[in-house]
Length: 202
Image (cartoon, rainbow, N blue to C red; front, side, top):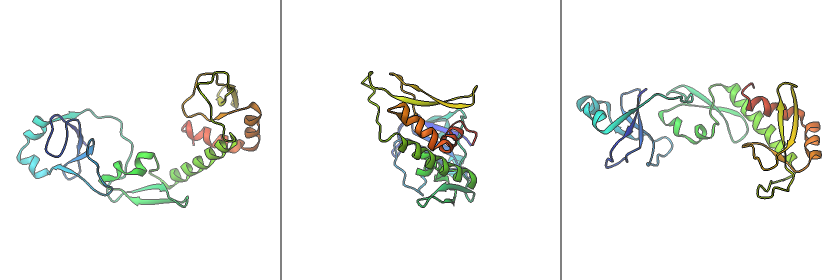
């Protein structure tokens, strides 16, 4: 699937907006300045227009190099997600699916099992966040104790260290060593679920 970037403003679109050719040969808006409602597809040029005026793509657009793209469901292909009741539900994909909210936040999977695993991860991580007892690190206070958990792949064990003034993005921070040890003891299973999911082995 070819992707293009608009070089000059058009009446409806702005330079820098991104487009792609869909399976019908239409040039459709992907991302940029336009606000697209769910279920809506913005067509810049239809297949028939592009066939009649092939210079449009050459004069007004720049073809973008292929880059990694997350999987998304094609039309009439299922994708799975965790719904408001905590169940693994599914919908059929559409061309709009890549710009939908579920896709953008990562609640969008190829299999039902992946959706169930994601739910398990979210529940486990929330348990660990509760274990911090509401602690919010003050990163401007270098004298405040802050502890974070790490996994020792050599020793195959969970451990912790004092963070000092270095913040690890995405880490869960505890105020005391006692709180961490208590969390290890009570919620070893949840730590393992989060560790495996975040390292891509679950």
